[in-house]
Length: 324
Ligand SMILES: *Cc1c(COP(=O)(O)O)cnc(C)c1O
Image 1 (cartoon, rainbow, N blue to C red):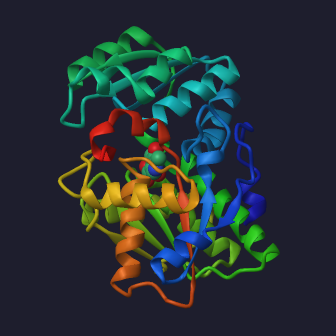
Image 2: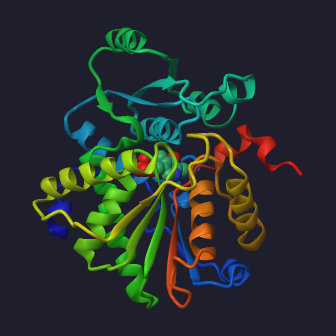
């Protein structure tokens, strides 16, 4: 089935494989399982992140179909939008970003710094659209384009994480290490779904512990299940049924809103490993990792992989969460 994966059009954008590292000081600080980290913050494309892998397949298809313009969607501080802008710059495609104020903030820092600053620098056209009419108007103005859904999460983008699981399986065999669990942030769910499908194909029996950071657990679980089914159909394999859990305990008041647990986790990773997380995704996922360890829900003698999905530019629009 890995041969099937290779039959999909793909453009190379990432520095792959990304490093797999042991976090000895973090493991010691937690006194729990051996923690490892998969550095998809180091995919190499304009500050890195998980969207690079999805875009290899999405833009592979766009280029194969002869498109010259790409349009995608996200929050004002979308990492997906920033990565899409960078990938389009690299491929010489016009990039149109339709961004929505989906986080309850409209201060100047939030609307001008971090990812949205980089979008413009990377040559994308940014439009802030707040309702269906504005979106329809913008699409009419843009004209024919290859449309990528929010987060790059359809079955094509998800192939990037099927491939990532195959990549991890090869690295794990080389070390060697057998992962009991993979902890990862989930919003539009393509990352989680791809890892679930890919783990089954590659014979990794690590359970995926997805930490919901966008919508509550039930909605996130439904997105994961739907994408697992659609991606398995695309690959012509049976959808894996178990092997995953979606946790809603670390979302806090909502998407993009800082929590104390997030800030603690961001600080801990920074000070034990010199690794920077982000306030919206990986910080909450790492809060989930800490919470699962502390409540005895991860095997104390096991090997647990934390999948870093990037997002660092988001730190700069949440200075209040990290002062003091
Ligand atoms: C988009 C994103 C995620 C979530 O990935 P999904 O595939 O949308 O679930 C996690 N971390 C970062 C930094 C992201 O930008």
